[in-house]
Length: 137
Image (tube, rainbow, N blue to C red):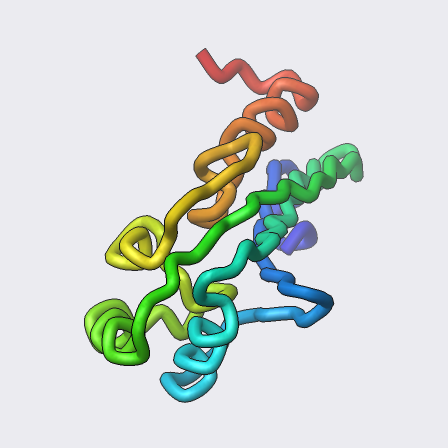
């Protein structure tokens, strides 16, 4: 990417969830998504969103991991099925798409940036952009 854009700021971000030592990535399909949500229901899960800002001109990079604790409601298998059919969140870590109907699965969220769970921690990104002398406002 940097070779194609030699004078750019390149932003990368991705997420993973962790529960009791088990890692939950993007499920990819319905059966794995259902299994993830069944495993997480009624529990508090650590979601980690990794963020990188790379300056292809200078080679400088800024890296940060932003944690979000998410407590899931104890929902039924039928509720999980209805959610998965409505949202199909197969490309979301932990299968919980909080910017949509997935918010109904969540009882509580705790973290330094409300955007981190959606996938792009904007508070951290603003700090990184300022460090690269980008005028935000």
